Amino acid sequence: MALPTIFNKDISEKIIQRINHLKSDSQPNWGKMNVSEMLAHCNVTYEMVYENKHPKPNFFMKAMMKLFVKKIVTSETPYKHNGQTAPAFKIKDSRNFETEKIRLIDYINKTQQLGANSFDNKDSHSFGKLSTNEWNNMFYKHLDHHLHQFGV
Image (cartoon, rainbow, N blue to C red; front, side, top):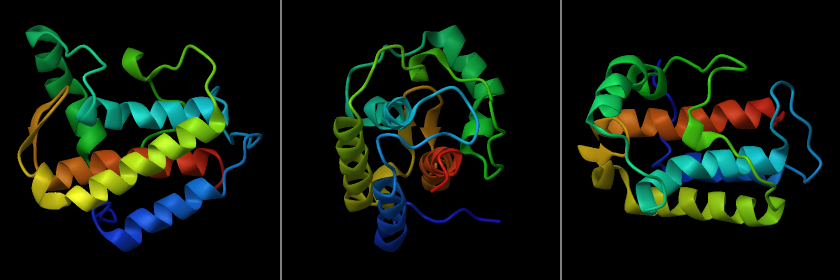
């Protein structure tokens, strides 16, 4: 079953509404991250698209990620609770809830405004070129997973 399209304004607004239901003291239904760390963790996906902040994996690591991780990240299959987190996505310092929330909403809006065509066959940080559908699944599934984690 196809995932909702994050490039669609109505869908991105529904995700943002869910984010706006979070509070700085929202508790997770599973996992170790607090809500501020979760928002920062979700921002990493977008930082890898829009910022030159994270080192790209070397050829060997990129090949391994394409072989073993890409399908998990870009398919429609939901993530399992308490799954492995890639090192770049582990938040090791404290984060400000409002700052991370605003950053995430800004990234979602930017992605929606750029539109699906901007992502068709676009090179990803870790997996090489992805289709629009793969980008959508990666963006939407990750956000939906963590918003469910925090009950919104």
